[in-house]
Amino acid sequence: MPANDMDYWIPKNITPERQDNIRTWLNTFIGNAELTLDAGFRPAAADIPSFIDYHSKVSEVVAKIIIGELPVSAWDQCLEGWYKAGGEEYVKQMNEYIASRRK
Image 1 (cartoon, rainbow, N blue to C red):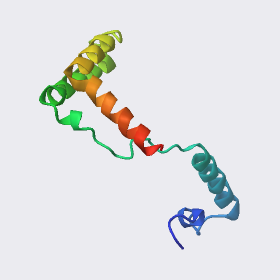
Image 2: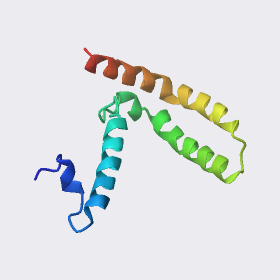
Image 3: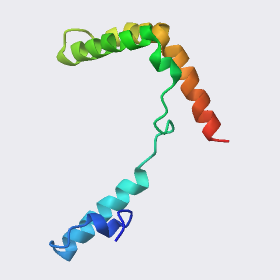
Image 4: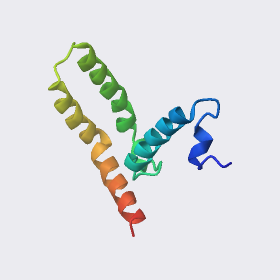
């Protein structure tokens, strides 16, 4: 039985009712799942030194927002810095890649 057969994921040692319940949830999941448009693509802009360096700043700001050391509004300034550090080029390259896959 191949892994893309739904029954592959349903244990055989449970009641048929429980199997049906799992099948229902799997159908719900499959019906709502969306594949990412980037398909694992990594834009060249991701290798810009300033972009790489700014990634640690983003992680720091997110962590501080989560633990309450910074207000949520700090994200706006962080995001602005991300765009200036190479994020704008990253988004441009990613959008070009996604558009090329849709042709």
